[in-house]
Image (cartoon, rainbow, N blue to C red):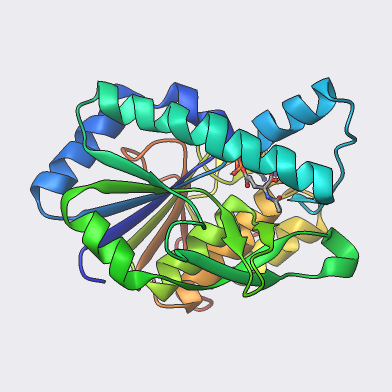
Length: 254
Ligand SMILES: Nc1ncnc2c1ncn2[C@@H]1O[C@H](COP(=O)(O)OP(=O)(O)O)[C@@H](O)[C@H]1O
Ligand SMILES: CC(=O)N[C@@H](CCC(=O)OP(=O)(O)O)C(=O)O
């Protein structure tokens, strides 16, 4: 899809989006860019789980999802974080529409590894026709859940979902917005990151938890043909840019 920018907004970032975020989006829309947001809600899901005394279990940043966690996840994503984000756009007078897997099969997926993660999935395909119609006049906000061919809801990590969607749609840019200004080493932003350095930093436990699937998602998007992939906390700063191996003259060295 031409002129497409995909932005993933982590659950922790929804309430701290600065005015510059909305003005950048407004400028892009005036320049006829199509804007697709994928939202998270991980910390809100964990918070409600705690309140309901449902144990929170994660492996490498992926939530182990049984039946009650799945129901709770759908409640939080579709009943809390998506409308919260939509309200921010309403307040900013930017036309936005919220979408989820049940809207005309917009996100179809399969189990990632049922034995290991339970009701967790990956995106396999999407309804490009519907998305393309919506994106002509609106910014679209998608929840990171998929439906299987048997109509089973699956919980999908929002970074993984955003990168696959950006890849399937051949987006020109993918921003993974989070609560840190980039991938950090000794409290300093790594401006440019290649797969080998990322592996090294993971083996040294410098990259951990939710940053792991985020980095995997970033490299996947690059491999699927997305031209520019960044992890940052605001659209105005480049944070960490992802590069293919051999294209890393600015990458940090040890
Ligand atoms: N090397 C690293 N650099 C930056 N953040 C890191 C790193 N390793 C682990 N993290 C953690 O990853 C978090 C971002 O991932 P996550 O909590 O899943 O964010 P989001 O909800 O935005 O997807 C940071 O807040 C930080 O705690
Ligand atoms: C399978 C899996 O881990 N799904 C995520 C979906 C939400 C998410 O990714 O939200 P953030 O981007 O705010 O972390 C979860 O349940 O937390």
